[in-house]
Amino acid sequence: MLHRLDAVLATSVHIEPNTWVTTPNGELPVSFVLEGEGKRVAIQVSTRLQADWSAEDALVLVYGGFDALYRIHVGSEETPMDDALMGIMLDHTALFSHVGRLSIGRRVSSEILWAFTASSVPFGSAFRAPSFTLRRMRLNVATDWVAAFEKELGGRRSHAA
Image (tube, rainbow, N blue to C red; front, side, top):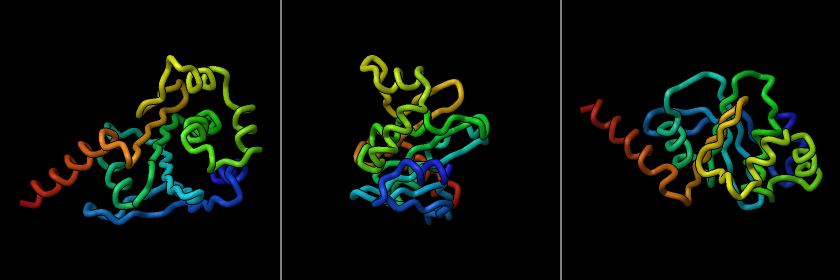
């Protein structure tokens, strides 16, 4: 995915793969950090199933100082990444080059293109497709992360007592 990101991002955007964020629950990994155009965006790519990523993602979002965190859960390595990148691109157009936006638009499946752009199907905080799930947390939208964040930190304190 690193090669695909590098090919579609604006030249002013820095990609940092495989980083770590220090939280009260220890260090948590981040697949990719995109930084540029005044934004810091985290992208988590996961292939393993976990019942709920929201608590871990809320900690990474806050302690990493990200504007947004996207979790792409893929069923396999063959998942078309352009389909998943479409949602991120629609939120953060300035991070992508003109050629990159066109490239993603040409490669994205027609079903995903319709779903992301149709006014009757809002992205919201999660988007499910047959080959991937895309979840979004935005720091400036408290309902995206506050409950999970408080639950995770509250649960941590109750175990220590």
